[in-house]
Length: 506
Image (cartoon, rainbow, N blue to C red; front, side):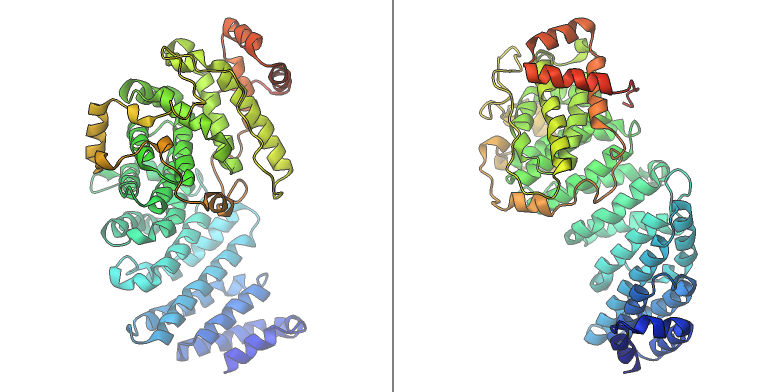
């Protein structure tokens, strides 16, 4: 009851001034109560204290977390019949999350955040000892959130690596997914993202039982894409695929080649617009990673380059998020940087249209960033009359022609067989009506630029595009300007005048 009374008192506006001088004594008494009983109200009181006195709890973070870890271990071992103890255990983890986050975010510098959280790490390791066992499923989601926080805050990519203890959990996490935790795929995205993006070099060089970590993640993506009638799991796979590709530039060529093949196979069975867009954004990430390699797979191996670009550009209005638009612009710009003689004929002949789409995306991104948060109908429209005039004269704006099922049958059969896909169930993505009327709402609920960190955050996409145009041979640039609409020509000249010269990373 004492813990409950303190929490209720803290809700008073005057409580802060009264409690602050005696905060150490209050925390000491609450910790004693934790030692004596497993009670959700006591743990909730600690969360409230952390929230109200976040500037002052850092010196006590080690003691608090140690007490909460002991309380968790005691409560989580009470058995399935002890519902109150299970709830107390979960709240212990949530209180620890609040402490870790508070301690980290009080530090303005990343190195200081890492130092503070690494001091807490030894206190927290007992929490994770049995978390990957199936009979601990009740606590798995909350412990994953805590693990994700630790990985995020305790490393500084390229400067401070993750500890061996934390890295030891990575293969166990993937093994749990493979054995019993498939339904937790949405909860696994964040910790996997943080492992890859916060300590990329270690991720790239480590292996488990002879299998490199990037290959383990690729296998997880393939499994998430193997259920053809479940878009939700496949969407989680696209998120992990993007993290893998964008963070590992130049280091996973073989995986990217295989990934492009799998994306095309999964795209054939995608029903909802959201999944199609996320898969196409994965193609965009691969093009930005290495446009030459990706085009080689799409054109020479799969014979689907023209059809896929047709689907992609015909769906551009469905790219609701700023992040996906930016990634598409970077991808199309990367295509423009390829030597003309190495481009597929359909792409080479369609450069004016590619440039038009890029200019439209530049303007759209500027507008949406200025009006972010405002509700508006899609205003992006492709230019009329511009075609990718390959040998078949197919129009990339024509969804009827954008049939991804025209991949070479023998090759597709082999890839599909490896992926465990029944080709009899495949349907061309553009010939299947969207099955989810809530796709737009789903997109609006997704994190967008500024809500999460991405390797493309610091790339100025307008400058990147302008420098891609600069890379065109003079003859191609002159022909391009002659074919462009006046408004596009004016915008392009302005971009070229304002963008500094820069080297391409791919």
